[in-house]
Image (cartoon, rainbow, N blue to C red; front, side, top):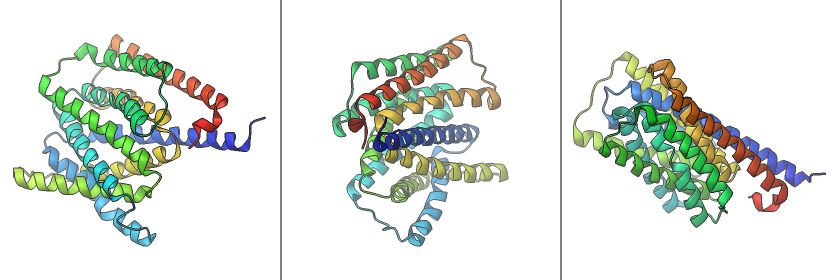
Length: 301
């Protein structure tokens, strides 16, 4: 009979995975909005994406009497800087590259997360886990292969952003022990919001959006806020090695969005690649389930 501790940990892991899946859906919708708003400067979109956070979260913090500045201030600021670089580079690649290509490059981040977490968070890594991630990566490559016509410059920027995304997620996992999720989100919103506003003013290329664009920008901010809160909770509840894999689902969601809204019809390679990603997810689930049954104390936080 399983102990109460094992059952509680299993429930937390399942909830953490669910939170990551929801966050991934939100991120996919965000990127679709960014793609639609390609007539606006990147910094303008980044600023509006964080405006909702900057307006709402401080009010919530004050109402809930949560310390505004947090505990681990250096790591909060560092994570926010990582997030700023990752977001700006991602928004740029989504605007200038094929939608699925940009999203797929972003999904290299779980590889970097896996290794950075093993170094800085001492989370275990083994051959079986690496093999599962490699299988998912092959699926990701197959998805973009039919139209893989990348300019070197945007692709390199996307890869750089992917590395910073991994660093952001590892820092987020470490912050779960010291700071409230809303404090983490607040730092993120203000740091990236002020950076993007400063760069927008420096570039001097602000474009007055029309009514529909304003609505989408505001919706982008709301969904972005929800995604940040849910993502933070996911890493607070479950180990990085368990939930980070589900970031790959963004490729599948983005492929669906591409078909529905951008008329990007996936070919046979894309379908096969998506199948490999789904298979990898199932293998990852089986592997983690077996490990939790064998070593429940080591899987808990």
